[in-house]
Image (tube, rainbow, N blue to C red):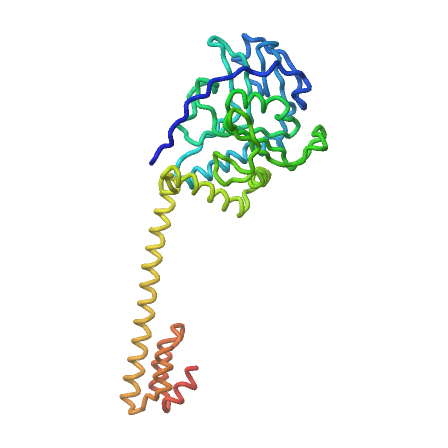
Length: 331
């Protein structure tokens, strides 16, 4: 397997000023002291040590969670087809530290690594230290990541951010925010909106949005996932046989095909053998009774239906008056 070259972590630039409450619509502001943030186990959008302010999105509805879980399912499908696992680490802490403690903390809804080896084995993902995720997903069911978080992702150097606004509405969502997914890719240190993913070649924003809003993957989404997986496999030198489960499934499928092929061949052989016995028995009966086998009878015997009763045909060959009588009674 050809491994892509791992990019060095990007140096962290200065962060934007501490946020205000209106920078995080759909969230409530709470204070979490600096000496408690590393042990905080709740779900937060953003925390800043400068004012110890944390912004928490509540409630965490099922509609908000569906999109993130569906992305995880899609990553599993693509990874299996590609033949190399894709790691999804959920809402792990994304942090900037001053060497001793956290300075900033963010949590995305999902963080995706195309290569499992790139995902850090640590309590958090530290910008400037760890390899950043290839893609992070923000589900704006009642929030708006564009207000503040997108600028932080940009300043920290995250290569690609997906912002999903689900089809299911919410009373707090501004009426001018339609259901859609936007892809933001980093170019020259600034985000530009792109029609398709850079990390997942050819996967368009519209296709991703549709997939994240399907209860079950449609046939179209599955085909798109296959297409994306094949593009990743081509660049990485992998394929379905590199996935342990698919390799076993494909091996079993090939073996089943061989077994069925042999069985079908044996069955066809037995049918041909049975028809040959019937033809020979009819010919022997006609010869013993000095009856002529006409061209019509010979043609009928050559194309005889295998489902006909062989015993009855042989009996009829000894009872019939001639070939025409045999054909009339056998048909």
